[in-house]
Image (cartoon, rainbow, N blue to C red; front, side, top):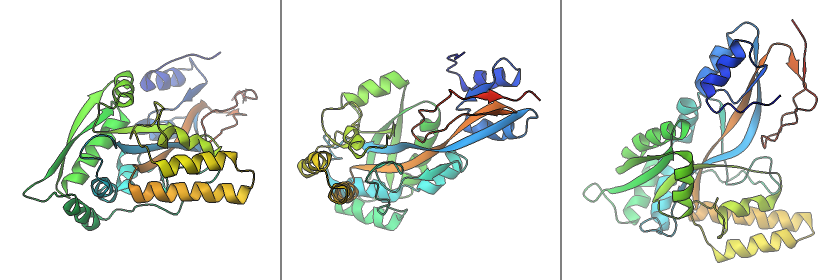
Length: 285
């Protein structure tokens, strides 16, 4: 029996009281609570959902490459993982899922506030002319992430105003291109062309509204290419262009968790979060 319970706290309470046997996606703040509760177990997997900062490529001033790169080098991703995810995530080294065909995890930005300030200066901003922008987020983890990014960018002289939406409102606003920048997540499947949703025009997932003719052509060439080596080269080239252009700032891929009744097994976990529950069993204690 599957039950839809949107509130993470309600799901966990239902597990603790024996009302359910498996609680999907408990809140990160409750993981230690699960680990410390007799009769419960915490099972985990490494996910491929990419959390990222998407800057609206079609809206000034984020059409300036220098400004986008300033944001990329001004964000401390490891601090986001440690504070927001309590260490339960992996840094994204490219705008590609680690389990995705063609992944080339050799292009992380790294936290470099001095380089960020240099790019800010190249974009025409300084202490006497500071840059300010609005960051659209949804509630919960992304709001917490946004608030920490707000503090980090303050250190390089950038002022961030947090604008909170409900999930549906954020999706609609960013799809319509009304935002300046937003925090968003995208679950990546295993095939290389899946990144087209993020980086090519005409999709609701392309939250940066990125449109690069060279990238579009390379993606078309890759999906039609039969030679694995050549197709992989196309995808590696795309990832390097995205990195150099500051199309997005990839942040982290969260570890996924299921809190379960002790003795529960048989769940086949997949990085894409499309798990196989057909062989679940529970050994009565």
